[in-house]
Length: 267
Image (tube, rainbow, N blue to C red; front, side, top):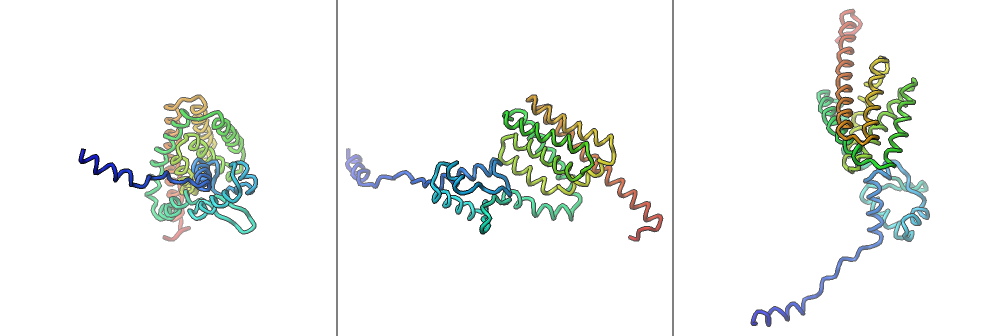
């Protein structure tokens, strides 16, 4: 009884803790962050006009403005005077920028990058085959059709862009935020290698056809919701890329060696 007589008055006299007040601007900022993380707002995208976005989110323009200021201070949005508000590439660039320089100076990193790409893309394909929605599959169909179309032509730059886009759509269909952003970052790092490899393969019709068949296998396995097959198709694709890059490097070394012997190059 003594204990209760001592403690009860203290409990009664203690101030009641109030739940934290959640500001509307914080809720709006969280919603915009979510859209950036999931990839529905991508780096470089311009946000809709303030009036339109406020109506879409069901908030006042002052609340929206405050939320946008918060994301600008975080570096996720940037404003251009008279030009609107844009999504930055902060989530990707902070990973990619230092690695791009390191890869240029350390060729041995190329193999490590391919191993990492193989792990990432096989997991992405497996998850996409399991989780892809009808909307994801519609996007995948569209980008695969584009890939098939440009691969049958001679525009190598269009082939590179379509190839990168295809793999990114697969990564986003995995519905894992980190996979989506790591994939985009990785593609920035290896873009030059993708370009060199596609140029090498484009000059070899049989191998070019093999590359198309690999993309088709990934697309079909995801469409038909076959996770294990999708993962294996992605692994096979990256192994083919690794082998073709090795072949390209050996061919280039043979060319240089021949030119040195002919006195065309001086070491």
